Length: 146
Image 1 (cartoon, helix red, strand yellow):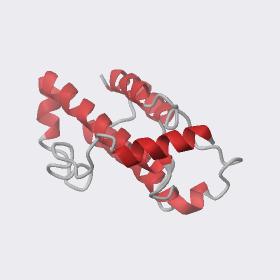
Image 2 (cartoon, rainbow, N blue to C red):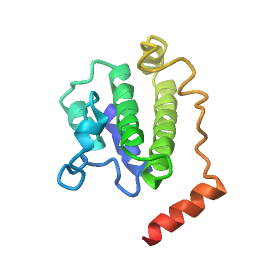
Image 3 (cartoon, helix red, strand yellow):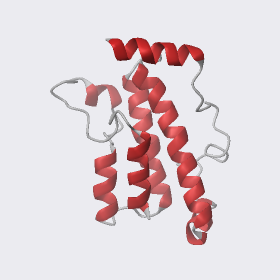
């Protein structure tokens, strides 16, 4: 089940920002900036899912939050990656919600997630909306031309 979600997440990330670990050659300060968090990406999530290393849906969702939190912490609020990380997190959690509601055993699990991993309402009504604003679209276009 979780492998299927990771494949769907990859579809949300058309620019492959979250597909692989951040290159420490290109971003040598990355680990010190995201400290005490560890790095996270979709390929790591996929390996963890194949190896059955997730103890449940809460740990899986925690990695979605970790991946987005690292991107938000490392990148400035004005950067395209920052905005894309917010949108990715919201859309990924929406997919988890739909998937969980379609699988009764996962739906039960979502009701027992620890609040610090998945705060109540965080996946139902996130503060950031997935819709692009006109400013976001203009900034994304400007970033694409660079």
